[in-house]
Length: 309
Image (cartoon, rainbow, N blue to C red; front, side, top):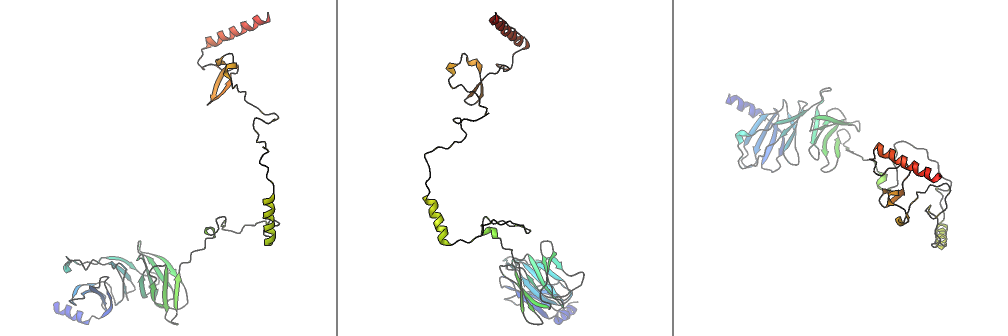
């Protein structure tokens, strides 16, 4: 078995290679779909695993070096989590590279020319073989979020901008570099606070002299004329107060001097610092019994009859 495995390994050929973020190790893909981790100092393979069913064509790492992107000729794009290979207590027998996602076109079964991570590592982009579209997946859910269309030619190597939402690709037929970007609409309200944005066209009736252009001399003359106008600051204009005569206006009777009243019981407190005279239907405390009200009416009636005599 060992001799057979050695013969198979001898037939392997390295097809893709990339350094880790620290530079202490090399990640290498082979023509048999295997991934080898090589110690850069000892030049020995410390880990090997079959990760694809065909030739590995591209290896990419995120900026942090914790995620690996693998493209193979089996038409499947894979992402793996890379362990900390520079740890002092690293045990080569326990190294594991768990698979995160598989991206593929299950409808058209397209092959991929080149792949790349987004600037933040949250997205994966790929150019298609014998097709002009670019595919973009979101790693959080592993779903396809956008298909970019551009020139009608096959795109080769693609590369994300390191800080902005821009993607560059090289056309295989013309050699032109095509760039896709996200264009944000201009917000005029940020420049002019009184500017109102509308979703649809609104009919506006222009005033007669609203947009007339006047000479600067005329505008300056109007401003000086307004400054020369006399302003009356002595005459008090009416504001609808108690001092003005109003027609058919109700006024609440207020007694300012309680000493002029025969009894304080004739007034009711209706607010803070406001009193009014009791009306015939008002009661002192609102707790008088029916007998008290009846006796009060009899006494009042007797007083009125006595006056008539």
